[in-house]
Amino acid sequence: MAKPELVVKKSVVRALCGGGTSLNLSSQRIKDVPKCVSRLTKLSVLLLNNNSISRLPAELLSLRQKLAELNLGNNDLEEVPAVLGHLDALKKLYLFSNQITVVPPEVIGLENLVVLNLNHNHIQRLPPEIKQHLSVLDNKLEEVPVEIGHLASLSEINLTSNKLSQLPQQLYQCKELTKLYAARNKLTSLPEKKLQVLDVAGNKLTMFPFHLLPLKELYCEGNRFIQCELMLSVQDAEVLSLKELVARFVLQEDRKRFSLIHRMLPHYPSLAALLACGSCCAVCLGPFLTTWLECVHFIRLKKDMKMKTLLTVPVRALLCSYKCFNREGHSYYGVATR
Ligand SMILES: [Zn+2]
Image (cartoon, rainbow, N blue to C red):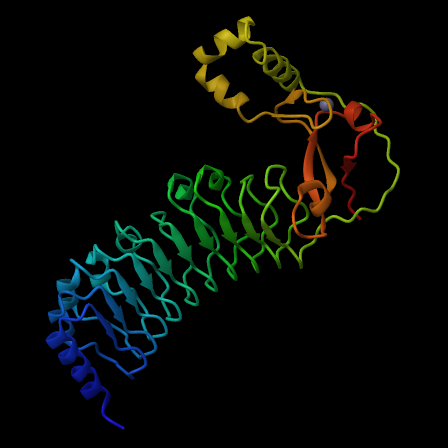
């Protein structure tokens, strides 16, 4: 078998002579990327996957004008090579199956980066500068930064097999986000975000949020969804705090276009911000601020949501009072624990 260095040098010389724009050096037992690769300034694709690379020469900086795709998957990188943070033309960067623990913001923040694959590493934290497609499958992430809400172009995120117990509510601000893969984590709740594809199999979910459905694809087996086992319960009316009573009155008045409160509220921004946390009752549609009854209703995904699955799932519903809960003619159930 020819020596790996020789094979590599031959490939580089061939690419140099032919003015090639792509170079495939995958599976060549490479430990050190030869510096002569840096002379291929027209390269747009460089495949270095399936080798034993633990560092990159700084000379690769000369590829910064054209290099759009770099595959360093399945190597021995313990850290992201500094030179990557300067390869401004990169659109796709594959760093899967290494031993990376930290992703420097310079790399995640590369201007043109669309795909960043960090699957199968040891990453514990993400910088908030995430791009359109981010894949961090099989890492050690314990949280997703809340700044994710600022990423207007994020369309797909793969967080499968991490250690996440929750996802930031700010995800709802990511207008382009349609695909969320978060199977095999420890999620107990989900943000209120309309999506097309959701994979949350193998988590600790008990119910779905109200605004999540319908979806084009849903994978949710292996959770702890509330079961529909009926038991009779009639509750006495609760006593609301003065703050809650006033908040409900103000929220109700604010719905009337010509009311004094509706006209005055914009002049009290801190009060308006506080009231923005309010929600409305699933039975009477009346507003409430901080006091509610958490209930579920069971949605048949095929019949009620026109989805392709026959699953019936519990969906969270909030009621304003026991008065509404005890009213007949609705299908919201209180949640009992055993
Ligand atoms: Zn109500």
